[in-house]
Length: 100
Image (cartoon, rainbow, N blue to C red; front, side, top):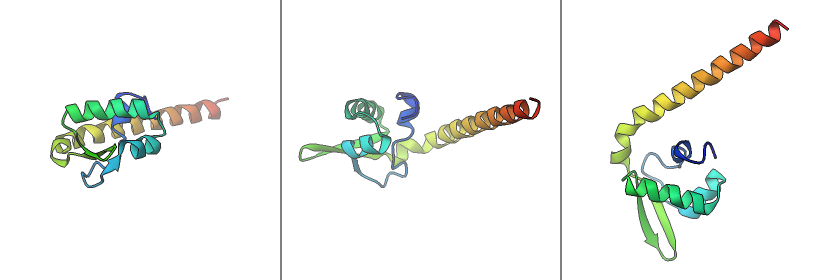
């Protein structure tokens, strides 16, 4: 899981608000410990970014499409910045190899 904190929260599936997933399924998808994922989901729920509901003994979550709408630009900027940094690092590494 990328960063285990803030960046990991950006990776939770279902940003379109349509998918409803159990906390355990989200933890498996992110390949992280269930307790840590549960804590992230609690933070996201308290912030109003995901909606949680109980179904039997499990808790199901889905993204709140309305609340996430304004964050789309933030997420896109995050991805753009990350991709630009990776591109710059790859180009610098290639230049270093070419001059060795």
